[in-house]
Length: 214
Image (cartoon, rainbow, N blue to C red; front, side, top):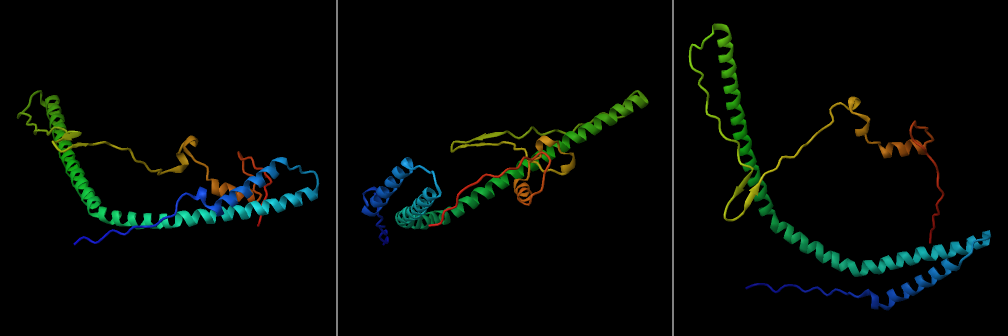
């Protein structure tokens, strides 16, 4: 007998929540104050500081309300995603194993094909060398059959399998790497600038910002 599915009760429509509406209305009033505010004295800055602190607190309050709404949703999503991810593991592993075996087979067939070409190339070179030396061949050049390159596309009634080649790289000698491919280390540069180090090719400056604690 199939067990009944659980049903989650989740609150939505925060735009009709009185608590959220009140926070929004306070935010609108603060916006109006900010638009009409004139800073002309230290006292004006102190008054603005009070408002900045209030803005900071309202931001935190709105964020808390948001988390109240999305918390249960995220929790259920995590549980649901976890179940389906677990159920997908056999398919993921089967896909990986099958792809790996196909690629291994194709790689081995290509290795054999290249080896056959190499053998024929050596035999032709040996025959050419004998012709230059003796003016004739003492025995015929027996070339081995060379397999055709594996197809790049396989089609069946169920589907199509395509292949692609992707370039990969690693830097083995950074000293000889052209400058256009050298990426600045932003973290290291920032630490040096903060420490007062002058770096050729780097312009450093300071900008003032405000930090508000509610």
